[in-house]
Length: 157
Image 1: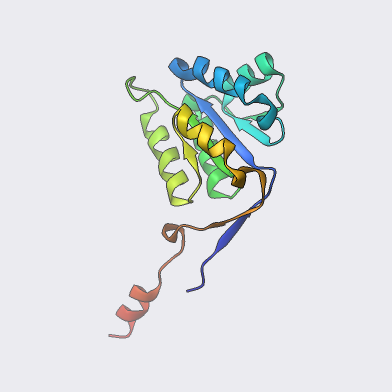
Image 2: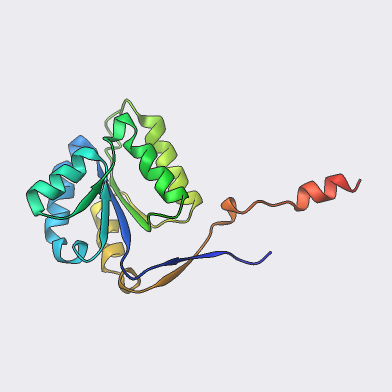
């Protein structure tokens, strides 16, 4: 089976999400990287997007707040190839009422082979990578490609 690749443009579509206990950290990181972030297309869940727009003057496409469907909207955008990478500062020590949505979002990011940063160090490495500023042919994860060989083998028994 031929490998499928998705072309990431040089101007990346970046999703930014931060849980309440991590919003200050997200704002600090975004302030430090404001110049770089401003050259990309930014997406965020509700409150995080409002914070980035109000505090830093960045243009951000806003989804709903995470607990009321925003995480699912970002996950759908990832699955449809409309997000190139995800920066998600989540709080692993604080239970969330929408934990299943958080897990689903992280799962779809892995399934779709989308670079994902869940902490500042990883976000710094991804954003400072030369690949962030050029076109990149991202191989589609094999999880997203249907494997019909088992079906074909069974149907020929």
